[in-house]
Length: 352
Image (tube, rainbow, N blue to C red; front, side, top):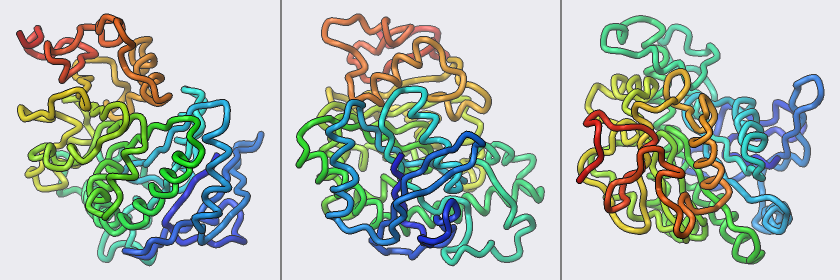
């Protein structure tokens, strides 16, 4: 399982090769192949701290010529390298796809890897679901302060990683075009969608993304207001999918941490949607979404949600030709197909 990164990389450090520090604004990319052994420990091989485009082709071309669909995955907030390896393995196991991960410094440390100043618990381990602790009533408490400040630092780190992600996406696009074999899906979860949003401003990035078959924004931690202004730049060969859930506790925590000023796309995209054959919003509101309502592409899967994500991650269309929408979306889609519903919306009916 290949994981690329813009983190600092120490080739001789084994499983700890990926550091929590990185160079803001740099294009340099590192890589390793991650395998978990029988004891549950991660083993990294083929560690390279500065991947050339030729190196990347040698690594990626066999995947695009292989037996399984390719899924390029950009993780969200509070993922250590080990968390990233584990998430990629989960996706591999659940959906039988060849996962290529991108690991970025999302734990909320400064770019040199040091903890934020004057922050209690600033060096403590964190996990992406921790942000759900941040609520209006708790925001002044020590734990909530830690999670909120580290989340805001992770947002800064994401914006300082856009050149590296753009470079990585170009490597993927080049391999896809040269192989002219298997398609791939690009999926970005949570704060990874924020990283992808700002990466689209790098010249050539949207063209790289256009080589994907599907783009899937999973519970995107990006501003809902005005999202059409950047989402239209995602023009894969198939369709761009945006999932949302009004009961996503993690994204509510992000909303509070941002001062209650940025309603999140992954909670409610609002009334101004991008409509047309290239886009579909998928509502998981009122559906089974697992604890916290944030990782429903892996947690709390139902037969319907597993079928949906299997198709999207395997570079298939959500709906096959002539297939009724209720086979995939339990209560159907809006008349114009803009939104597919995994459960009834609060209105109890779909748009007329």
